[in-house]
Amino acid sequence: MSDNSERIIRKIGIIGGTGKEGKGLAYRWARAGYSISIGSRQAEKAQAAAAEILQLLGGEAAVEGMTNPEVAASCDVLVLTVPFSAHVDTLNQLREPLRGKILIDVTVPLVPPRVTKVQMPPAGSAAQEAQQILGPEVEVLAAFQNISYEHLLQDEPVDCDVLVCGGSKNGRSIVLKLVQAAGLTGWDAGPIENAVVVEGMTSILIGINKRHGVASAGIKITGVPR
Ligand SMILES: NC(=O)c1ccc[n+]([C@@H]2O[C@H](COP(=O)([O-])OP(=O)(O)OC[C@H]3O[C@@H](n4cnc5c(N)ncnc54)[C@H](OP(=O)(O)O)[C@@H]3O)[C@@H](O)[C@H]2O)c1
Image 1: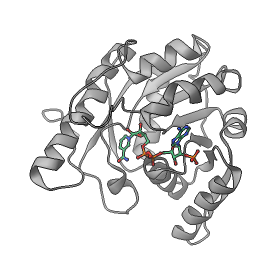
Image 2: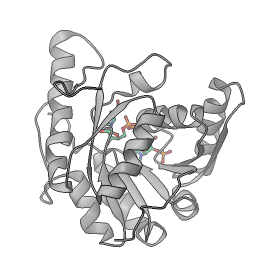
Image 3: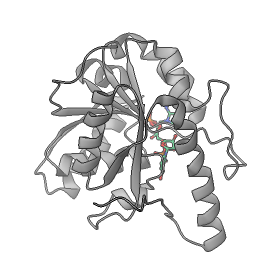
């Protein structure tokens, strides 16, 4: 695993960034001044998503759209926001360009139709599956699984915390800075083995959404001074 302690992040690539969660994160980070590359299987779709975010920000941002392999090759920090059904294939296709980089995996291993039931893959979690596929040359971290996109594509403060696990301590501190830049509170949640809890929590939150007729239940850490 590479030493990322001195890395200064200016540009973030989002694989599958044309979807709901990816666009929400892109909006938040572009608003905070980061350069964003949105990735898609189709360059035109990525360019349209980039134009949409630029318009939301009144043209005052650095957002571009390109194919997923181009994004993986041109950014040092990548975020993966694809449905779990596309997780393995997408990672297998991007193994080479992701070498030596940080990957923030936002994927939740939901298995429709029973999305309110926790169903982890054999690797233990989606993040561990990513680490297995990509090998030790990629630093895989898990974050944002409990943040509904509905929170991200607006400017109000978000009353929901982000648990960050996986990678090295330095990697987690880089991701925690990105969490803060997105306007959220993040917590170092330890090693990648803990991703099972964070990813699994999403199914519980979706169940609470359904039972209470809301769209974006979340979690908050209490008992620690902020
Ligand atoms: N939505 C939320 O509120 C939320 C919250 C937390 C975590 N998550 C997790 O974040 C991930 C993305 O969620 P989302 O709601 O943004 O999903 P989404 O809108 O359904 O899809 C995201 C993007 O993934 C790409 N994609 C779809 N099918 C694919 C396939 N078969 N192969 C490769 N790429 C494919 C598409 O991009 P192109 O067609 O442009 O390639 C799509 O725009 C999921 O794992 C989800 O569980 C979502």
